[in-house]
Image 1 (cartoon, one colour):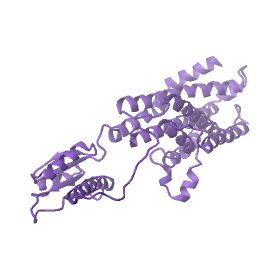
Image 2 (tube, rainbow, N blue to C red; image 1 turned 90 degrees about the horizontal axis):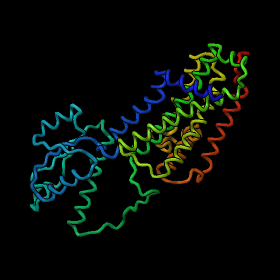
Image 3 (tube, rainbow, N blue to C red; image 1 turned 90 degrees about the vertical axis):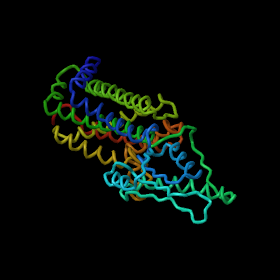
Length: 360
């Protein structure tokens, strides 16, 4: 069994193309999302600021925009040049502060002009939201008034989490799912197609030892995947892991077992490599987009949420995000771990009933 385990590891390392898709493909997502959404980068993009006013209010607004870390500021003096940059998608929006804005003169301008691209809806909301909030505070100060109602925000962790922190955990789940389901299903189908499984039945090697060696080798691969994603995310893009990172890895490895059991179930049905590959993609692609890798699933329509919350990846990500981002016990909501183990039991039952080393 130990020799079989080492053999499986060697075969995975030698299969460079498969190794790329299982290890480095998730890293591509990790790096791309890191450049766009990590805490050290601006979240909206570059804003052109045309400040034609020399008042204290205009100067303080410009300073606040520069210190906000929401967007990068590019100063221009010509509106035509700025509009040309906006048309070429080189900037996100234009903010124009007219002359004498903030002056005590009665006829001084009272509005800031924002020129944006309707296609950048999320960025436009961030820009207008920032300006509205800043000017609301200024209006209260001028009128010497205090707001009556306000919002008090409390979080489950003291760490300032970002969207990148959220998606990083999702990428771990995605990597485990793709590598385990496709890796097991395709390799088992190839073994069957090449009559390797049938030959194993003629050797002293017991079936359970073969399966155990295969699963163990895949778990080593899963551990490398998780480690690489966390190292790149934390040390290169400053992702925040508020909880116990070792507990996070343990439950990620539980996810590896979950998806390997699904992989064996797919392999028990697929008779060829092409069939296994097609079925694996059909299983993983919907989960990648519907189970919460890139966005919270509670944003989905209610009828769809009531379905996708029971997909194998969804409860796993809920537990992993609870551990990593909120530092809460995965047993706080026991329904998640029940769903995960239920999927494992069902998939193992299907595999035991249908999977055979030898062809019928």
